[in-house]
Image (cartoon, rainbow, N blue to C red):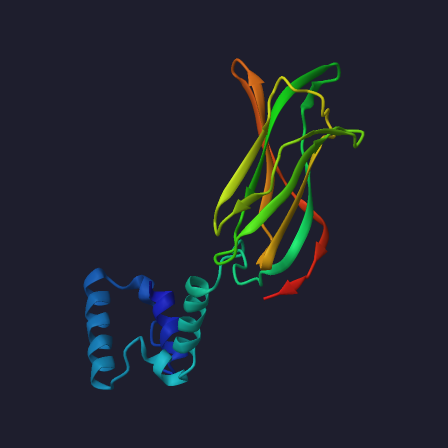
Length: 217
């Protein structure tokens, strides 16, 4: 305690008279501290004076604390990124009909293609949704006619777990169009499978492979 007191008084420019404190009795130390406190009060030099004297330390510490508690977290996502708009796109979405769990053991998977129209104003129209196997061969089509998705609407298409024609490298192809330049939809494939207490689930995002009327806004 006394070493800290001495350092504080030295920083404040006050004389350090704390010599021989180890040999003092408790009463003597108490009387000495009382005397020092009275002297400091009368001379307007309390232990917090170093902050007043420098005029810099307190604001610097305060700035550091504010930076810690008000700065953005390292993991914060940039939600202000501009919306990429287009008139039409073709989206490739990787999907799996099965996956290896051991060298000679394969686990069948169901996959669900999910399309979210993230545009708050404009509708988009799904003109084609198809499923392809690991060789790129067309397996099936999901749409008999175009499907309109309004603002914030979604659509999903299922490939059942017993349909293993796609293989490990299966994929979906999606084509959409809009009368107005619209935000690119959020497209993903969700895979799920397993039996008993063993379960598998994961998702893969789509990738735009062609785009018309590109516009950033």
